[in-house]
Amino acid sequence: MNIFSLQIQTIKEMLDWRVSLDILLLTLLIFFLYRTIKTTGTGKIFFGILIAAGIFIVARMLDLKGIEWIYSNLSQILLLALIIIFQPELRKIFERAASICESLDVGGGPIGCPDQFSIAHEYFRSQLART
Image (cartoon, rainbow, N blue to C red; front, side, top):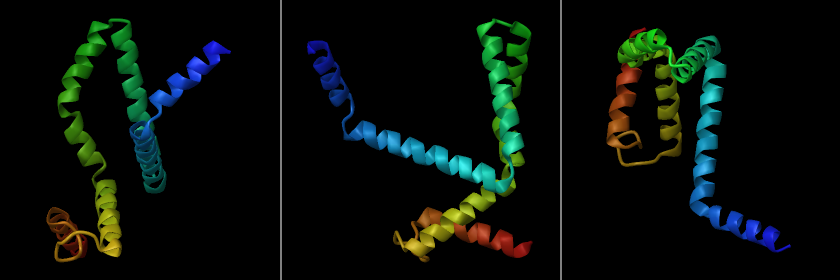
């Protein structure tokens, strides 16, 4: 009984409001990422990226120098490649965020959003108008 009460006390000490907020925010982030991948149809690309990351982790664990060398050299251009590959999806995400910000009427910018967000919103709106 004493060990059980000690375990409950330890759990109560670990679960303060910051931990709960952290778990909630991470859960929302994962949910929105999943929903975005599901709705934009990029699931196969994302799954391929996860497989490549898994291969890298296995290669690192097994100390496979050739694969590690290839991945370390490819990682230098990976971020740019991901931005290019997911450019249409990123545009949709920014447009959705801008429309949410407009509908909530938050901030002090000209369209009800913070200034930096307003600039990005106007840029993407003009880009969409061209297409």
